[in-house]
Structure formats: C-alpha cells, structure tokens
Length: 221
Image 1 (tube, helix red, strand yellow):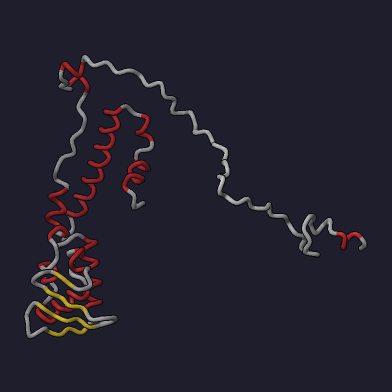
Image 2 (image 1 turned 120 degrees about the vertical axis):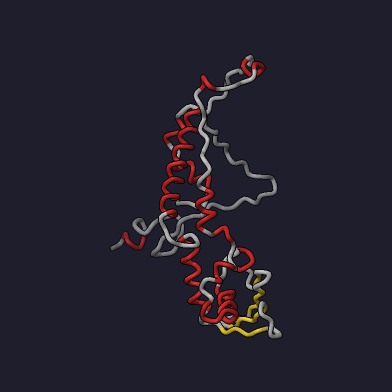
C-alpha cells in the first residue's frame, strides 16, 4: 500500500515490464478488469445506500455530533451555530458549508453538520445524512463506474495503421542504459573556508593524537 499511484503501479507491474508494449497494456487491462469485477460483485451484494467506507464515516460522525450543542441563528431552519470542543462552528445546510471546512471539501456530513441535522430533523435524522452528502459516495454511482468495459489492445494483425506510418524507419538508439553515472570529485570553492580536520581525543587524558589504549597513563600500570 502506498499513497503514490506511480509507485503502486510499478509494484503491481514488476514482471510485465519485460513484456512487449501490446502485452503490457493487455496485462494492465486484465488486472484492472479483475479488480473491478471483484469490487462490483462485493458492492452489488451489499444492502447499503452509500458505500461501506462512507457509511462507516457517517456512523462515526453521528456519534461525535451527538456530543455537540446546537443553536439556531435567528431561528433559521438551515443556519446553525454548533458548540463543542474548541471554537464554535457555523453550519449552513442549504449551502452544504461549515466554518470548519470539512463539510465543504469532502461533501460528507461531518460531526458539526450531523449536530445541525439532529436539531432540524430531531431523532429521525438518520436518513437525512445521505441527502446532505454528495451522491458520489452512493452505491448506485459506485456500481455505474465499474460497468464501463476496459479496452484491451487487439492483435497486431487487426491493427489499422496509416500507410505513412508503416513506411517510417526508426533508427536504433546508441545510448547504453547500463552505463552508470560517474561520480565527480568534489572541488572546494574559492570562497569556502577551509575547515581543520577533526582529531580524535583520548577519553582518559582528553589529549589529541592517541587513543585510550595507547595513552601514557596506562603504560606505567
């Protein structure tokens, strides 16, 4: 697992790097098609409105929101002031915004928005959490995204290439990729001050030039 998508793909496709270009693309398409089919089957069998991870976050935010205190702003039905740990937060349900910015950026009902929904819909606000969250977390859109087929590279005999490209001649590269970079010796600049070499000191007499084992204080013993 890695947060860098390039490193992730390189780790998955270690063996495929030795294949021909067409075979590489076919292998990539096969791997992703296998992953997509597996995830589609898992999500299709679940009975949730949102994907499992989003539903888990919503449950956690409901628990956190129950511990916050909410107050209406000028008796409005969409503007609330939420108090709790730290400074107060202003929530606007109609604009899907919160001064803590999480509600704005992630488009998912976070703790402060949950507290506002609790006051607006009272105890029956469980289903409203989905209405105030982005539909990108819904199971329907998740399944729709995995319905698109992944195109593979056809056989070379089936390729349709223009004649002008077929007549092109490409020269082989003379560059040797195995040649390693030579290490250059560091040259001190004119303005750089010369530093004296650090000399080791004896740990017994604290004098430089020798070690503890060859110290003169040990010779007479």
